[in-house]
Amino acid sequence: MLRHSADNVRTAADFGGELPPPEQGLPCFQDHRLRVYPYPARPPPLITAWLLRLPAQSVPPGFKPLPWSDILRRWARRMIVDQFNASMTCDAHCYRNGKAPEHLSRPPWRALGRGAAQQIPHTDGVGSWNALETIWERKPDGTYDALDFTAPTHTKWALEVIREYLGEVSDREMLLFIFEGVRWKAAADAPASPRRASVSHDLGEAGFALDAGSDSWDLVGMSCSVPNELWGVHIGGFTPCTVMGFLGFFKFADGSKKPAYVVCDDAAGFRYPVSAAYLAKTICDAATKKRVNKLQAPRAVARRV
Image (cartoon, rainbow, N blue to C red; front, side, top):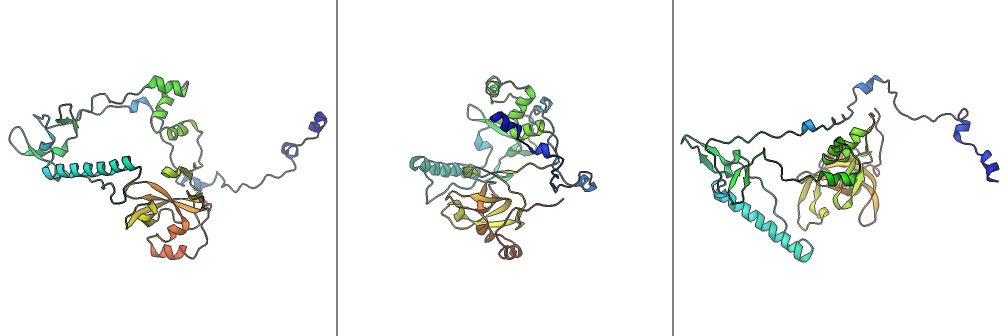
């Protein structure tokens, strides 16, 4: 019975001469405009010749290891100690209670400039040099010496163990895994294509989300000022952010599913999903905010070449 049924099965290939192919809507690849369209360049292949060692660090004549009190000024050392003490206080509270304290937060990180360093006299007695002109590393005896760029790295690559996990791979493929992983591997192994790959956004605890492409509100790249309440921080104020992408309909932690965008904290670089309705209230440009408030919910749109 099945044999007789199989003889009567027809596929699209059997009617290929009768079925007109649907229009794809793709541009003609002979179009001269494709020659000037800004496609992203493929990264160059990884080769072991790139693995070069830096030359030795240049230091003044007569250089010798110093205690940190001779490298940084007193007020700078006090700032560093206070910074780490405040961070440790917050971290200890999190460790003991399993959550961040409501009455304090980790202090913001600071960068000290040349003014924080001691001026170290030259051995010939003529002039001095700024201690932060040198990159220092701590020695076992507690003093600080010039970082030796020529010394072997302390990172131990267990290549045989990595190879055992990955299976039979070439040395070149091993480099692809070590240096930036999948992005390089895809670029090296995938065939050349003028089509763009989907962009994936790392949203931290919310996981990864694919970019839906161009949006009808045209907000990608816009600046916004997001209230700190969105991050669950019990402090007032706002955080400057940039709209990095459109997600289409996104499922939030509370189970709701609504149009959303990705915003990036301009200071820390972290990305967060924000509903379109919430984002519309935070756009900095007044004309854009007024325009968006008159529009329907955003949707993904295709851009023509």
